[in-house]
Image 1 (tube, rainbow, N blue to C red):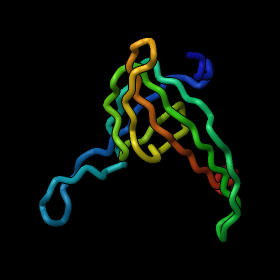
Image 2 (cartoon, one colour):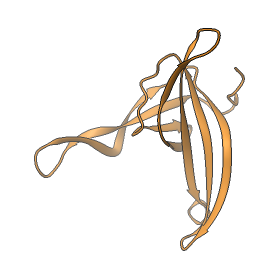
Image 3 (tube, one colour):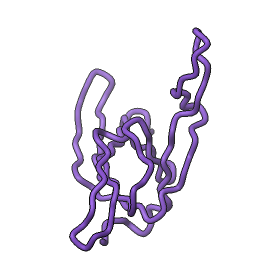
Amino acid sequence: MLLGRPNEGAVYRQRAGERTDGYGETVADDWTNPVEKRLRGASLQTRARSEDDDALGAALSTDRVLHVPGRADLAESDRIRVGTKIYRVDGEVVHYKSLAGQSFTSAAIVRERREDQAR
């Protein structure tokens, strides 16, 4: 399956760390220091690009599909890091088997970048 780009680098899953909220409960929503795990063999496939103008300036959005061999530990609340780019999982994570019997995990991911912040 030739979906990845050789120059993209390693793909990491980021999961929010745990913190104690104001009620003394442990919640997993601390993105200041996320827990990372490398997704070996992962590849990204570009699905769509779109531009949108709003009150804050033009935004460029890139939708991609993440494919990971095997049954990867990936959740809808996770983020994906490739180099310095951060994506968020956009929708359901799907586990399936190919016609050849190999299992894969796939998810749509999206990266949003404001053009006025990138300068």
